[in-house]
Image (cartoon, rainbow, N blue to C red; front, top):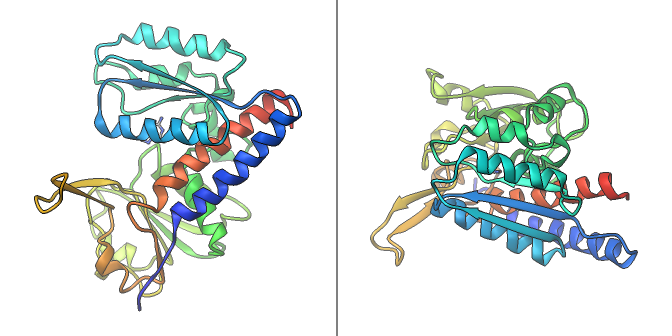
Amino acid sequence: MTAAIIDGKKIAAEIRGEIGREVADRTARGLRPPGLAVVLAGENPASQFYVRSKTAACAEAGFHSEQYDRPADVTEDELLALVAALNADPAIDGILVQLPLPRHIDEERILLAIDPEKDIDGFHPVNVGNLSIGRTGFVPCTPLGVREMLAREGVSTRGKFAVVVGRSNIVGKPMAQLLMARGEGGDATVCVCHSATPDLAAVTKQADILVAAIGRAEAVTGDMIKPGAVVIDVGINRVDDPSREKGYRVCGDVHFESASRVASRITPVPGGVGPMTIAMLLRNTLESSRRRVGA
Ligand code: GUN
């Protein structure tokens, strides 16, 4: 079997187009554009890249966006004051504090300070709780993007055995919540594996839908996958490769070549889940603006 590629870049572009048209329509009706504030502390190159991609997507879709770059030695109090100002700013619908934060900052304290109604990342405990009990809130963008991707590809999750590898607050846990939720895009039987799972392959081999979010390059290989499974690769890893101009190559948590010989469908890296995350950030910010300004 050779897996069909799930083209996240194409699906995300469609969604960004839909959002851009809605924003144009809203502004033509005299409503203000959705506003996103992105806070970046320190000089992590991967974070800088992600934040640039996010602000460029905002501009393209007609959003108002503001970026706050702070040095690596920014204090917790300075970040808290910035978040408080953004909470109170009527032009801002969404606040995104890019993670990871510098080590001396208590990440939880900063995330707790964000108004849950502007928490378009869905990281605040209020939104984490809303997701777990099926209430409307904000859902983290990466798992939301995976769900949207599966829906647009016509992959039904109902009654399927879904295995999520990774238990992070950003991806693994909310992904499992979405897959097990009642209704469309959910209704799966879900198993979450992690670093203490003794025989990972024994579990992943049973998965109809396998979501890899471990953060280890090419850790999921073809022999760990059930023939015909749908494989979603959330990982973005840099691996040294002197033959490349940049000295590295980018790969996922799935060994693409061996996996695509077994799976029925698979997401590539890059061009799979990554662009979907950004599209969902725009969707959450637009939704926040609808709730604040009106439909
Ligand atoms: N770091 C990695 N992924 C994310 C994300 O989705 N949101 C934020 N704020 N930081 C991240």
